[in-house]
Length: 209
Image 1: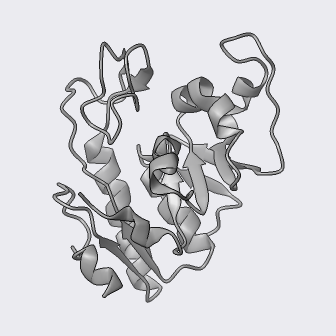
Image 2: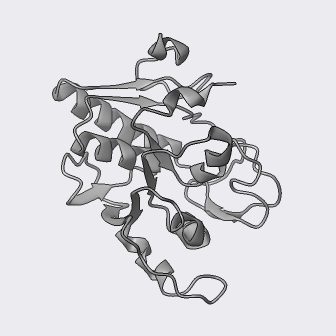
């Protein structure tokens, strides 16, 4: 298993249901990012409890009106909305404008990291491989434990989520790689056993030696 405690004092971006890991880690990520409407809708109460800046898609603002329990929720001082879109492929150097999602929240996080000035972005835990198959972007309802994430409850039984679009994600990753390199920056992939082949691979443990 990867020893994630080494990240405790690094700047980190956590995504979607990463907070399920926070108690085990003993620390939170520096930032939280979620742009998928289904994730935000179903997890908003959890997200609003996070003590860190939370970047959410402006498109999902309707989720604040009333959650599934019929309770109205409200943005707090940690809530930052992003103008993310499904269309118009591009890499946004300025996160204050329109940002293409590239079919993965990781692409949005890479754009945020660029805008915030990070010279090196290192991916950890990007498997880029899902056991659940079907037409990309199709909404499905989980029928049991989640086999594709670190926690069986990540997209557990009854959770509504969209099947991955790995081809579009790779398109976005290539655009991110090009943008970083053009600016004299870099994106590295320290995922242990990950299937993504766009970025240079690095040994996670050697990053801290």
